[in-house]
Image (cartoon, rainbow, N blue to C red):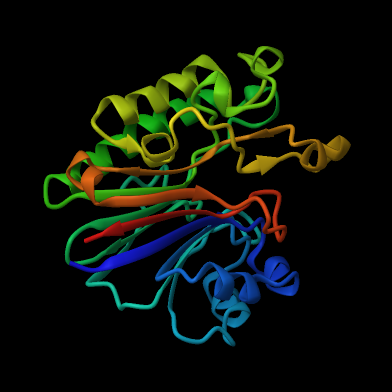
Length: 257
């Protein structure tokens, strides 16, 4: 059995985050695998941005649309396999899912679609959640899964600073999105932050507007979900608000596999 530390981070642009100190932060975080969301770069641009990063294999899945979405996995150990997307063309245009297979588990890195201003993508988001859950459960038939990333939803009132003001009005806290997260958890996936930290209040994303981060008016929308089979192997699940390269901060999971 080996102890591993996994980090998930929506960097809001990989090239911008590198200029702001991303490499130094990775050294401090000491992760074996880093799952990155919202690279906002094509595959070759991701490789170029991370060309000076030593000790990690770099894999990415970019959107067809340039400068938009995108995921990447940086792994010290070479995975057994890497898979892009979930096998549904409608969903696989935006580079939102990248899966690494290791001996004891699948690691699924996801950047879930935002329902957008005025909730114009809410119906699409609802379909995405359903199809993505099917993808996860199919993999889980083979071996346990770790699913991490920006889920673009605060699951409970405790997961955002102003639940009443945002409920059913703001992308990320509508009942349909909450139902989607209920379905993930209801299917047997465990929210590791709550598993380890109970009802502790911490956020992983803050708007750039109105000094939200300084006032800690935030949302917890970044998650590590794991198969029940891994529950006893989890030793730590943490949020790291001290890292400032993005409007999201990194989150981490330590487990034995």
